[in-house]
Image 1 (cartoon, rainbow, N blue to C red):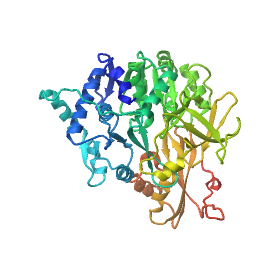
Image 2 (cartoon, rainbow, N blue to C red):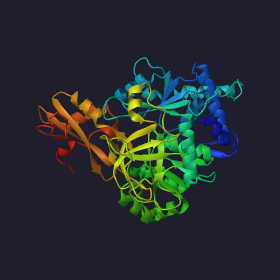
Image 3 (cartoon, rainbow, N blue to C red):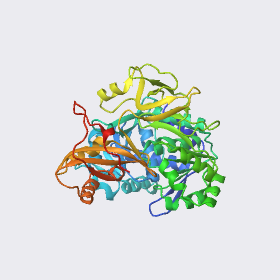
Image 4 (tube, rainbow, N blue to C red):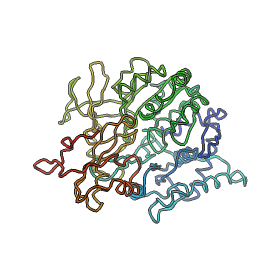
Length: 496
């Protein structure tokens, strides 16, 4: 089955139902039915085809949340095109690597971001595409019907870039089957219904927003409100006006929602049925504080860019704070030791997963794909332990991944940029606990002169996304190393 066959149940079968309220950057709201989204995506598919896009081509987008991402995504589903989402927080250096690796035909973006693209890469302005698609109606041109390209569960649909602690970031090849099975699992497990109202403040360049929120909405046929980005100062107004029944968030969002007054929290909780958290561990004290304020136990789950969702606390039954719950339907999870042998319950090991949600491998990286898979199992790199009743608790990364506000930060990338700066001879970046973001990066530097933190930060801002910027710089005489020269980050001095 292709993803489109699943989406047609709402795009065609519920055409008259109001599907989406999309807030634009100028605070205007546009509403669309499922039928209008079907027609819009058909016209976009015609425009893309006229521009030479064909099955298997890559097409990137660098856009803030907007309905045009939905148009583009659905058009590419129909054409068999591979979508490459690019994080809008990325700077030129980071964007250049993704574009150079994926080699898209073009990047759909705004005029403001064209200058951030590598030289020579075609930039297709989203406004131009909108006008071309609209002209198909205004000129009475081709009918808004597209003969969809034949795809199946194995057909690649997206390259979503995820980093590692060694080497450059890699593109996970997610297929029609990855997205379809993920949506079916989540909707069945979390009880998504056409009557639900889903508030989406998650970025659509991330699999949490695109893989979970968008497809849970499109497959269930519920109503979605899409906003440009999460804004704590506007959260109360969104919840009060829209009255969502479902909200997907990251821990940082829940920390900020706890800042609302008690009456507002109770009012929001009264109209909701489900709050889901993911992309980073949710501290147990946030679980309890949210339950007390909103009257809901947050449902925590666990997924990855390469696998979408793997494990979830149950909708019915105990949502156990500090755990990510039980394997989702269709997903099998093993916890293994260093030799790949299953460990006993209560014993820590690496999580290996298998299911239709798992990616097909890494784009043009057979070496990385071979390393990531073992006899059909995807090696997550996450360390966890399973209780006797099946609940899984994550204990950390096999790697040195930092998760800050739901975003993955890989220390080596920051270290490499730091080492390019004059006077810095050695650099080590680690994550330290933060009450709002979960973790934040801190850089330890061996330098020839005292560190000018403001000047260094100004330089890093031109090369790294804001969430990757170290929150402090600690000058040390030397980095602790093993006899073989490996940095022992756990021996670095503690900072608060």
